[in-house]
Amino acid sequence: MSKNGSLSTFILGGLCGAVLGVLFAPRPGYESREILIDRALDYWDNADDFYDAASDRAVEIYATSRDVAIDATEQVRSKIEAARTRLIEEVESVSDKAATEKAAIGAASASARKAVEPYAVKAKEELGKIKEEYVAAKGAVEAKIPEAVEVDVIVEEKPVAKAPAKAPAKKAAPKKAAEGTA
Image (cartoon, rainbow, N blue to C red; front, top):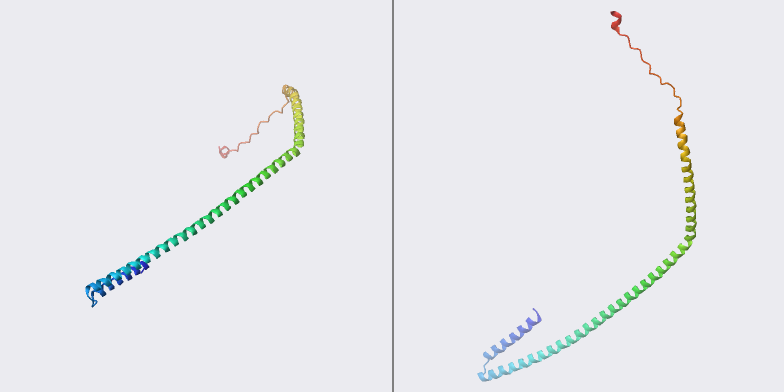
């Protein structure tokens, strides 16, 4: 049984025993009533003392648990604040590293651009020369095209003598067996 059930059973048993003891006692009624009243007052005083002690204990437990809860809350707050501070420091550190890397990449890009620039200029110059040579070659080819067309025309005007075509030879027809008997 629980403590409350045991305590109430104990008190109920004590009251029943007191009532039965008074009822079956060999004393006169007024004396029994006085004893009963005295005992009831004693029990009432004991219950009042028990209530006061339990109330004091409850207040003490409340105060202790409140202090423990406040301490735990403060510990959690301080840990959260420390974690927040560390997180902010990490973000700032990563941001600084990213800015440094970005600057290094920009410097490397500019350096690469400067290193490649002379080659790009040379390549453009060479490309210009090749283009000029192409245009010149194209002009020369286009200038020779009318000469080639004239040669074609001249060749067509003088037909080349062709050999006469031979007729295919005919095969001799097989002789029929019937011709010889007729």
